[in-house]
Length: 96
Image (tube, helix red, strand yellow):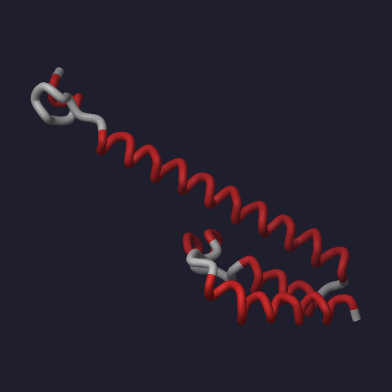
């Protein structure tokens, strides 16, 4: 009974909230696999509540780690593209 309630809640989230967030699951975006909500829904349909909760939590952690890694990588790209020698308007490595 509890699993059906969770699956129903995930369905509602996927239909009415997720499409309007403005971003998608980082895990799905970078791995081309199931989103976190889809993974959790399948777990709750297949396993008991406790195991599904643990697996879903682990999957969400992986998603967060991917998001933070990619964000850090993007910030490094932005930093390197914005830093240049103001005197000659070229990249610092070329100034040496």
